[in-house]
Length: 156
Image (cartoon, one colour):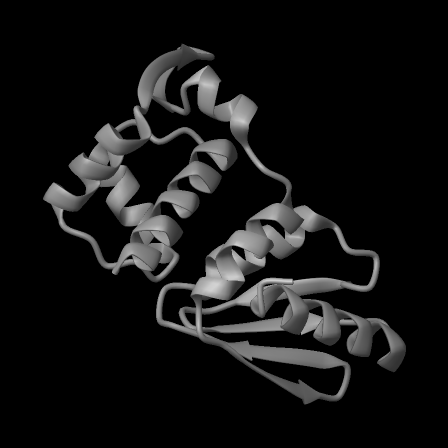
């Protein structure tokens, strides 16, 4: 269950970096779009745990990550290194796509970390609830990405 909390809170940080979210209801709806099913109590705990603050920007008061947490943000590769060893996942090849299957609600967090890592071998990714498609430009790139993800999943 702790892994789901970490995934959800990473998703919250990602969402706050992408668009203004003014209320806990908006946050719950945005998380539902990413495949997270949450209650009001869970959202309230996450807001408190993350120490979210409300700030005014362009006339809109919305949640923000406290400056101390923004400074502590990790790179995409570091996120993958922390995330993958705690999640069971399977990798399959399909043409020039890697198909990664994992726990429900986890694919978006992995995709966000992978996109943030900006690996040159990754052309792009698409995430559902528990499945992530990683597009590679050629077979060599696909094999390198696959090996790298498997290594990160082992904690290496």
